[in-house]
Image: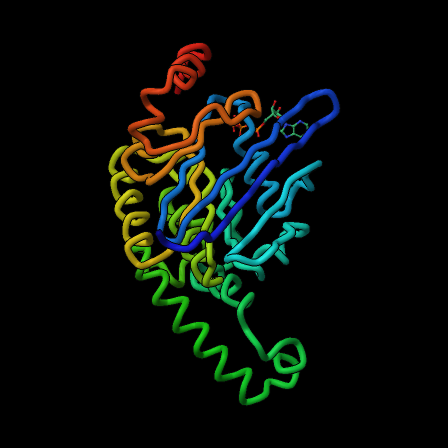
Length: 256
Ligand SMILES: Nc1ncnc2c1ncn2[C@@H]1O[C@H](COP(=O)(O)OP(=O)(O)OP(=O)(O)O)[C@@H](O)[C@H]1O
């Protein structure tokens, strides 16, 4: 069996009187697409935010790539090897697509501030390398021709793909996608699905929150289902779909 990339155990998080997560755990192996689903308010975003350092959990232990890992701040999480996209796209609107991806890549650069200020040879070489890599990533996600367009001028679907390119630029151990298909039309969803499949085939590991159950079931190797902060099922899409608690949770809230 392939190595474990992310192991999370016993995560709990309370907001005032609301237990948003109770003892939630997942284990994601290298090369998997792992889905996190559940009705509205189930705790999916909270769990994502905990893993990516936006919320401090009340309890929980974490391992990333076999090492203990503490998701205490967003920039440290990126350095540790988790890159994420957001449900509400967070790009630098006035920067070009290329510059947005280059920002992602800077997480992995070495010259640092002094190199940048003195514009040392090492810094310049690194900038050329970063630009080159950013262009490749834009091609990879299918928006190479928009490299010099401002991010805000791109279509919704293309902005989502740009976010994915920026996340990939950090060379993450795990890429976490927060509702990547939200607001996409059927054609865009097909393209997105192909892209996620390709990212997986290229050896990356993906954690996915998604409302589109069909997309999740078609793409994911394993799925966790949350309901009112509790993990009500975990397994392959086929198993999870048959699970009584899951059927009840979705029917009970009108489903998605
Ligand atoms: N910062 C916060 N402060 C207080 N309550 C919060 C906060 N964030 C989330 N919650 C509450 O925690 C619960 C879980 O919310 P969360 O956003 O994680 O669910 P979700 O499964 O992502 O839902 P959706 O599918 O609607 O995005 C909800 O009842 C929500 O109102």
